[in-house]
Length: 290
Length: 291
Image 1 (tube, rainbow over the protein chains, first blue to last red):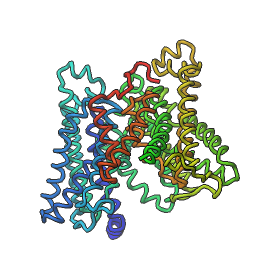
Image 2: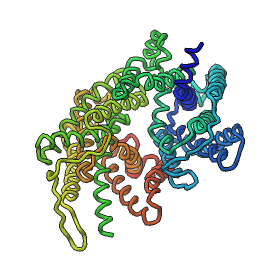
Image 3: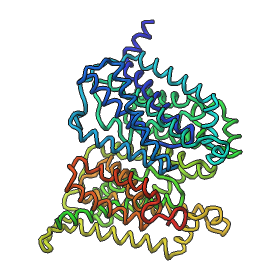
């Protein structure tokens, strides 16, 4: 028992970030599951992180209310954004959401209230590790239930063949938008928790590199079920801590894992035990990522 | 004023060289090669290494072109060829290129560290001469000239040579190209060699101009290159050149009415507007004749 407590104390930050990253990975999983590649979730987390932190610091909001406000703001921003960008597909959609993310980052840099490049410091550390994991559990269970519902099957149909799905009466645009907004809400909640977990936030934490990292968690972990993104976040967040002695070679391991998984396990690490199914799906030409 | 126009031409030329390699791979294979910025950085550091061994700057540019070209071909063999064989979606290729990019950047950092470096003193021309009221430095002028020559050479190669015809056929329809007897794997290798070589040369030239290569120098160009390609039209070579200069002049002009920390917002704002108003870009012709 003592050992466990010592372990938790020593790795508290890493453990917290595993949960936060898993939530972010699930937020992008929602759109990936419908076959859409978006890179805006880091920016949504950023919007919520800054707004909720400013609410607790400057406006004296209670912590839960600030978190909820931040997440809602991110979701609100995502509605008009989604309504416009979902006219695009594939790389065009990815680049459009990425551009949005960069505009958010530059906007944060330009607003004096956010502390600009120095970041926002002195945020009250109100997030406990159990807050993070309770939120993650709720998000993961909700996502898994959605996936197994009629809605989830419709989303999978959109991913495999958009035109066929539309001709079966599935409102494709509305599904994509709903996945996007729900993803923004989750990313926003995670962003608010992250801001109050780490004492300080900086604009670069929510930039392009972060957006790509979140995508990597989800894709390497695997899209077929909700365990994939959680596993991906665990691997890529815990690995750097475990590899501390090999710090210099860390990126090389991560890069190699990325390439190996994509090449040999296209449906992600979570499907390691389903290799035969993966091979069969490949043979019938199903989309690789799911 | 003249000074700023000169500056816009210079940075536009670098944007164009960078984006050309990016767009070449996209037009032929429909993938976004996110390792392109790493190759850009690799170019700058290959030249640094060569010049530290006593090579003159001009030879170092050629060495960087060849080394990066070979690295591009290897990148394809490792990260893209296995995915191509099983018809993986473009997302997979993007992710595996991120993996390679992480490795390349870290290898550079292991040798040179994360900080700014400098080319050996006295190896780069430092002369400055006045034309009219404008102070023009030799180095930047040579760089602009070289960039323009490379753009013309690439256009000639794609438009007028047998290899160019093969690449255009491949871009149009890989299956038909194979049936017509084109050695598809060889054509793809050539694409990666040219793309990575151009990206590497762009890195050297930018490294020379700033004389401070560092391991993350490619990142800003990656984001700008997205804007360049979208504005000009994804996969269009003249589009990339046009988009590059439009962006560089727009950025300089935007400084007149935007505070300087918002300079980057211009590129992304422009990109966003073009995507929504005309996703095919200025010169893009959607799936028809994209090289």
